Image (tube, rainbow, N blue to C red):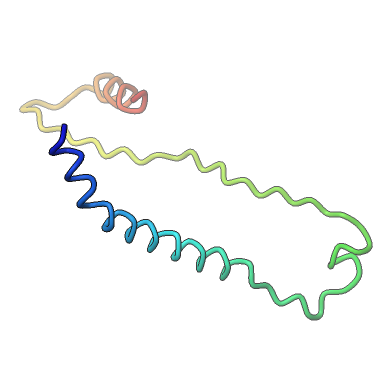
Amino acid sequence: MKGLADGINKSKKYVEKAISGVTDAMTIAMNSDFNVDMSGVTGAMAGTGGTTVVNNYNNDNSRTVNQTNNSPKSLSRVEIYRQTRNALNV
């Protein structure tokens, strides 16, 4: 256990530096995404005349399954369907 603790203490500065880099990148990304030029927006478009709620949800539940058949004989249509169904249930 002492060796594990020593290893963690020795690597602490590298982990802190990596986390600091990630948080800096996230801060830059967040700030750049919210810089919006609102000049020219007036009235209801600016939200002063009414309230508009827009909910944009990404409901992309698609999957791509690549199935390779390496058997010496061809599989039946039913067997391919069964294997595909089982792969999608994972």
